[in-house]
Image (tube, rainbow, N blue to C red):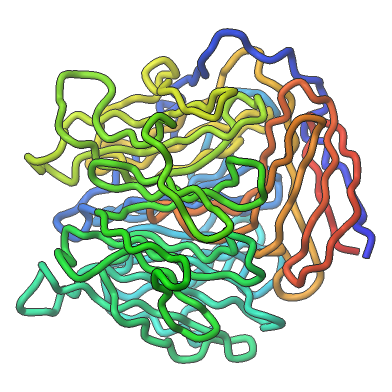
Length: 508
């Protein structure tokens, strides 16, 4: 089928030449928030602290639903005046008052064109159905979703085959009712499959090893997605590891399947093809080393230390103890055609074995594929206890901005003001049927010197998710060829798209 391509015309001005300044620049816009928002709470909110970034009113500007822990979660509606203007938000929409929220992920569950929210909580989880004008209603019971009573901390979703609704995977942390806990008391996880336009009773995924991040992805391009689970060794202590589940057989992979046994203090997952072979490399954040796995034909290899991605200690200050990594996300912050990496850092609470003042990382990829720290130069290296976050173009100027959720410190919003960035494309997908945003599709963009691949996924991060167009930095290229491999494997033809515009590709 030939896709129809429509220009959304958010920004038509050409971008200036690629910057020679050597590092990104961000401006703190946190003071423009309508209210100071803090993720807070006791032991059950040492983890979590996520944000869902998505467009809830159809104006193409990203809005935010932010977890509050013991404080109420809040919806902030984007009020930026025009493309390129200073970022601004206002309190708006209509959302049920929810406390105990650890994180949230946006996806259009019922295919009505409005993003819904899966809200993770300490206690019963909630499905919020989105409607016009950023109005949300509790659809948990209506959609026959079993909310549970667990301490939920991770999520991912996909559409399996021709199912009418998505399959939801929910990861649970420590079993709070285990009298012998919390150590070696990890809870089991859940798979919620659809039953027509509702959800069937959940399938238990056992064993669980205190999941803090999940991602359903076909990262190695094997023809079907798998569920990757990142687990916290602090509480499973021994006998556990990172996990990968075959969704068809519900069996966990092992080394015979090319899945290496890795045990770490897993907290966040980020995936992106960095090598140009179409397969995604995967970052797993942790206490100490951040593990980047390079995808190969046979499995995975750990990134070499010289690549600069381990970010194992604070890069400013005199604290040489290990860092604590949480949310991770790839994105091209200077639009040079090479993906960079943001990692939210912060001590669990006052954990003496790890660094207390732990700055966030902004690792910029160099032409040789190595990464260089620029967080302190960019102005985003605060040392609060960061948790969740998002890279997203909040003011429609073609540059990725940054949101950071902190524990016991206010939400931070940073506007990308990097001078002389490269060209860019923003690409959204749309198809008929229930999976209207084409979760599971691959978008490929190629210029004369590089091929970039994005998989449309729901999940990953640390309690934080986005449902936004795919952003491609193009460097000095003023156009790119783009094609889509749709979720059922159908391939669109290559089409040439002009840079510095937001495009919608509809499966026609």
